[in-house]
Image 1: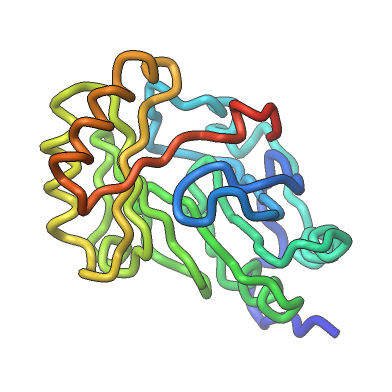
Image 2 (image 1 turned 90 degrees about the horizontal axis):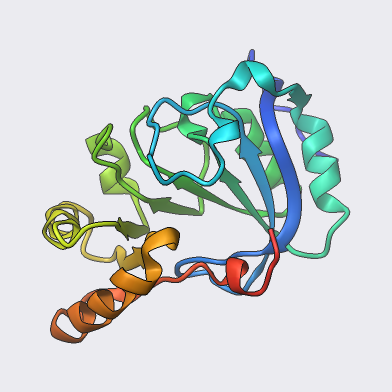
Length: 207
């Protein structure tokens, strides 16, 4: 039985929810149930889910129903993404997912205050709205999207601020992969504290 945490937040705006493989970073290739929350105030120019930005365009869904839907699948990783998930109070959602036996991961820019119970936080900082120190320190994984050559130096600025145990990933912006991927490969060869992240879900045509 799922314990419903006493909180004012019992529903949350959701653009989509689906079961697939994690395509990026440390948990790449693992089965995971994704919950994409609606709403983002960061506005990345390369965002491939810009339709998630306006929360008014997407329905609020009951958290209990989201968790029940997730439990129908065999995987026990739940990934909360967006949009920007930390624009919402994630306490009840993450608590109920934990009660249902999930490891709960988040993909965030870190630009809003931290809420929720997380097993894994993937921080992907953006120049448009930098992450808050509390999220930087809590991150298990730092994933920096490389769009320009200047982004390497910017990535190192954030690598110096995360914890010593945080995993470090460089990921080419999808539309510029042909140009940036060779540069990333050479950079990692010279700076082996970094690893490569590629969006394998786009190569194998899964969500």
